[in-house]
Length: 73
Image (cartoon, rainbow, N blue to C red):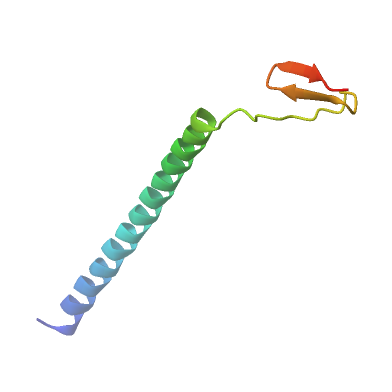
């Protein structure tokens, strides 16, 4: 194998390796997006409703329990 042939094979190898690296990066990005989407979906589904909420429109002695509220004297 002469130098010219070896150089050609090495150039082809580098080109294929670069293409493979780009494909790995692309697939990694897609995987991260899919996992992020699933994680956000899981957080939305499993996120419990807060037991106590203190909205600004409640009086100082009123406490909200989800969609119900009670007044304490």
